Length: 586
Ligand SMILES: Nc1nc2c(ncn2[C@@H]2O[C@H](COP(=O)(O)OP(=O)(O)OP(=O)(O)O)[C@@H](O)[C@H]2O)c(=O)[nH]1
Ligand SMILES: [Mg+2]
Image (cartoon, rainbow, N blue to C red; front, side, top):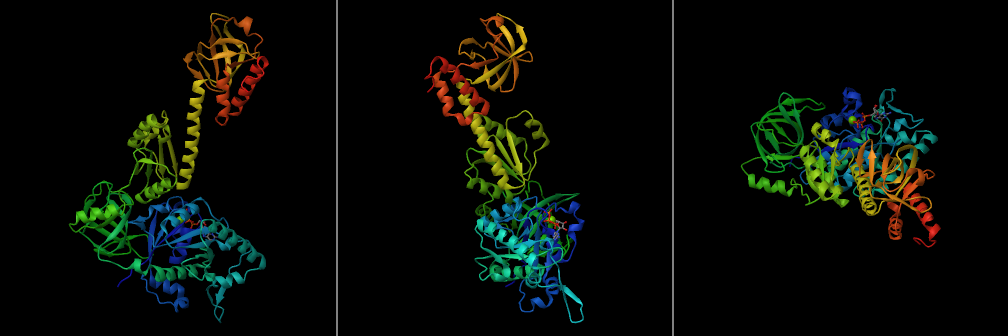
């Protein structure tokens, strides 16, 4: 039985060295061709076993190499590794989680770890940039005639470092082991592992000096051949995942084929949220070994990075699985359904958007774990339809008037609409940050709603009289005030520092416009009927809203919804009231 190359995804935080490690494995310099050295999008490279054999030289002589090579997938640190989804699991057979040993676990590292835990994909940790440890020396192996033979074996290299460097290395290592332990992983240096099914291998390395890279490759070979052989067996039916839809002059579907083989003119069924899309392959290309270039071909076998041009590419979405079509629509429909291409949503909830099916699923899974419901979920930028759903939610439950965007942007139209809307958009490139921000926003919003209810029943406020702005002495008296605390509403009864009733606020004006209420910090004009300013207010600096004892107690019970100034005002009102009745509000 034929086995295919394992698909190995390299994931981790921005700049931790994912592309550099891949470059050193394939002996290329892709990093130097990237804009700003930043990987912009997911890319794949095929590395044939011959190249691996050559680089491992005598090190591989004790191992039987059964796999035909590797298909590596490089992911941008800023985007989601969750993108890489295949039916019922992850597209990756193995993952290299790259962590800069000097920086440790960072936001994207955390995200990848969470996803790895969910998906249960085997992985190894490349503790990269060991050469950056202060004082680190890279020693070369030499043959008898002093000809350099590459770097020393990692273990030997560590042993050859000075005591200081060794201590520093150990400290960093232990810190990382402790962090990984927190996530439930029992991590050890790879050469100290006794049971690979229970322990997580840490391979210290440097993409720059290449120390540890051979060891990393040996780990990948070992793990693949020991644990993955069943997964790597090929069947006849072509199966793959569309990674990206590239619109150049023509539209290409950049995809990974992970099972079977495909020919030009074959028909494929591509999953969608409704009916599968049946379309014919017009042009077929496969990725060249060690390169990011494609070449046209008539037939490709798995595992492979391919580009297809199909007769109908409308409505195809990134992340969708595809399979060869042999007039078996019902069977395919059932299969897609079983594999969960249908995204289940709730009757009520927030709106979510993500850049691919894989990331949408990852987002939904994590939202579910946090008991957050979604009313609609889609792939692509945040559009007017999403905005309208959120606007509709505003009426039913403002806590659901939220759109979450994972690695997507909002359309220009939506940007315009957002200027005057109460809908909230939360976007990020890291799922758990989205969830963190969502919880924070919902909590704030919840308090705001509770507070509105609280202050809706009885206004709490303190006003400073602005003696330089007296517009009218009486009938009614009109003058300026500043809302020092709380919110002033029309019809609020005001008292002075002695607890005497002054008047009821008839109207509030802000820059010649009548308004119904004014928040803390606002300077406004108010009109009070039935008093003469010069008799009643000349010596008054502050006015307060009149509260009943019941209202006061209600505020006191909900003190956590009030800010510092409001609490002080509440205390001040009680003080004033107690001058006349010492047991007021007690
Ligand atoms: N000293 C040292 N520098 C390294 C090593 N690996 C990578 N670098 C440097 O770190 C920087 C980032 O490396 P990349 O390989 O682009 O990192 P990446 O993880 O692919 O980054 P993104 O694709 O942007 O997420 C580059 O300047 C590399 O030269 C290493 O082992 N040692
Ligand atoms: Mg990169």
